[in-house]
Length: 220
Image (cartoon, rainbow, N blue to C red; front, side):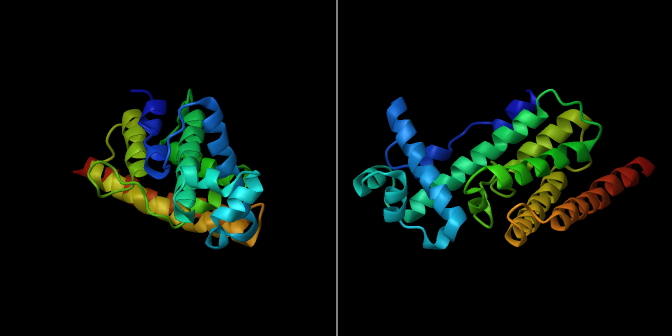
């Protein structure tokens, strides 16, 4: 399986949050317009104050159109988050496609860079911060940690215990989520000191766990 397939997997996102699944192009465009409106509002005033009426007014739609797709504001936010997650995975897949990795950190750093880039150019992307993670099939670690671990194992072989790798990447995801979000709260363009520190902290954390484990196993 290619790295792109390992990262993208199967997308179930929209089916969970949308009341009426669009079947025609026009309906899909209308749904995207509602989510675009919600994203703009989130960037302007935060997700806590978003209402369905605001979404309708910003999108130039009736409130009935909003309720056709979403039962309430929470469903709007869930769907916006799911779209953001899907676009993040697509961005990572694009970066991974055809890349000759020079080490496991290269893959992880590209995933971090994708997150930073989307904070900058994907409206409403901050909605992913602090929200519940989709879990892998085992119901323990974040799904993306499992997907990224699969890419690393495919490229570089097993780095010790596969479960440990997924656990460590899950922790790294939480570190990146917190520090990158803080960077963009401090500066709309992203506080460069925070962004550099996010990479340093995550790399040192993973190096201490993964490279240290490999040295111990080699010595054994």
